Image (cartoon, rainbow, N blue to C red):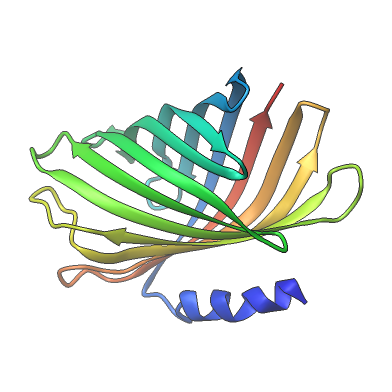
Length: 217
């Protein structure tokens, strides 16, 4: 029943056809350690590959510090972001981010993230808002679970280096959460990412296979 509630959201958020498509592989590894009774620190690394980039397309490395207030999580973080195309390094990005995660009950949580993007190709700061709705459902007592998520990216301003205000992209994902050990689990899934074309550019739909490793002592 809960999964059926998500189906209209997936259908509305992903347009039926895109003028460009790309097949991609996204890999991520996170490690989290407690720093207090109600706080923790996370180190994150991301590597992405795509057909249009002819191999390595994107890397990110950074960290996140989280405070827990009851069931609500508030976090501050930083990421260094690099993009590549056909083996050539493109301008890089330094990204500050803040988010809050709020449980909604019945397996649903929402995450609201605000980002400040510092791009090496120009002096302006790009401000971006990302809203995510996620659903998780336990399949076994051993920790195997199902997850589904939708995320919308809203650019809050224009910059000379290319960010245009308005809705930039949407992501819809579906997958399995897999326990490997008491402190290690993985998430294997499929993501559909739809990028809206700007300034006459065509829209693009990305078909993404994703795998994430999560280490938490």
